[in-house]
Amino acid sequence: MEELRILLQKILNKDLQQIILSNSRNPEQIQKVKIRPVLIRDELLFQETRYKGTQVFHENYTAAQMTDGICAALQEQFRQGEFTAKSLQATALVSKKGKLTLKVKNNGVSKTGKSTAPEQEDLQALSHNRTKHYILEEGKPVDFLVGLGVQTPDGRVTKARFDKFRQINRYLEFIEDVINELPTDRTIRIIDFGCGKSYLTFAMYYYLHELQHRDIQVTGLDLKTDVIKHCNELAEKLGYDRLKFERGDISTYEGTDVADMVVTLHACDLATDYALDKAVKWGARVILAVPCCQHELNRQMKCDSLKLVLKYGIIKERIAALLTDALRANLLEQQGYETQILEFIDMEHTPKNLLIRAVKKGSMRPKHSTDIRTVEELLHVMPTLDKLLNNK
Image (tube, rainbow, N blue to C red; front, side):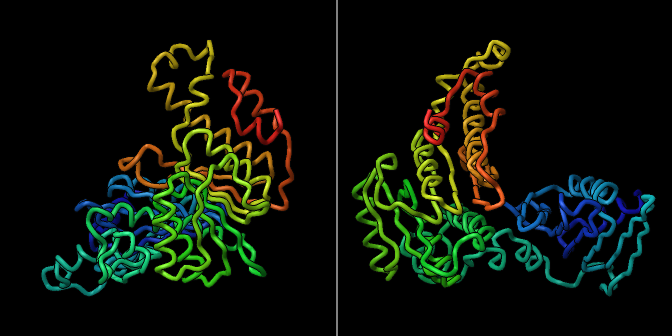
C-alpha cells in the first residue's frame, strides 16, 4: 500500500481528472466509487460519488482523507482502481489474497514536468458550480429561476441566491433518483404541503414537466394568502398550466383522495405528521419530507437511564429532533415504504437539513413493529404520526 500512497500524494491535486474504484467484493453494499477534484470556496477538495443500486451518494474530502479512504477501500471493498491525471494513468489490481499490483503509465508533459494548461483555467474547471454537474445549468436561463430572482435574465446565478440554486439542484437529484417509481400511463398527481415561496415547487414542476415531459398535475398548499396569490400569478405568467396553489391547512385538507407523490418541506412540528399520514392513506408512491421544529417528543421524553444526557436542554432538543425523524421513517417502513434519511443541504446553511424519502414498494407489506413500541416505552413518548397511522 505504500506505493499506492506515494501515487495518491502525487495525483491528488488540481491535475487529477478521475479515479474509479470498481469490481466490488460486496456489490450489494457499494458497486462503484468515482472521485474527482472540486473547488469549494477556494479550497481544493475531492468529491467521492458512491453508487449503490439506483442510489448515488456524494461526500467531499481533503487529499489526506481521500488517500486514507482509497487505501482502505482497495483493502476492504474493491479489487480494481483506475487513476487518471494529466501527468499519468495508473491501474491498481488486488488479488484474492489481498496483494496489490500497481501499473503506472506517464503521459506527455512539458520539459519542466508541469502541465502546460493555464493555472487559472484549471482552477475554474474545478469549480464546484460547473454547469455540467447541475440538473439546472448555471449560465442557461430558466424561466422560473429568473422569475424568482435566483437567476438574471442571461442565466447568471445571483450571488445572494447561489445557496438556493444549489439547494434546488440537490432537491431535483432526490426526485431524479425515484422518477421511475412514478406512473407513466396517466397523469401524475402531486401535492406539495407548506410550499411557502415555492422555489422547490416550481423546480419540481419544471423538471418533471418541461425536462422529463411527464404528464403531471401539481398542487401547492400554504396558509399565507399573499404567498399563494404571488405563486399563482407567477405560474400563470410562466404558462405552467398544470401547477396551481391553494390556501389551506395540512391537517384538514380534503382537496383530493389520491396522490402519487407528496412533498412536505419545512412543515413545522406536527404539520409534517399530518402530511405523512395523508400521503400514506392516499397511497402515495413517493414521499419527500424535510421536517422542521420537532417539539413534540422534546416535551414528552423522559428516561431515567439518560438523565445525565437529557438534563442539557440543547442536547435534549437535538436528540428529540433526530428521534422524531427516525421514528417517522420507521413508521413509514411499517406501512410498506422503503425509507431513507438523507442530508438535504450542508449543515452550515441550516440545521434543518434532513430529508425523509420514502418509496412505496409492492414487495413490502405493512407490518406491526414491536421495536418501535420498545423505543416509545423506553423514552415515554407517543408520536402523533403513530397515533394517526395506527388509530391510537
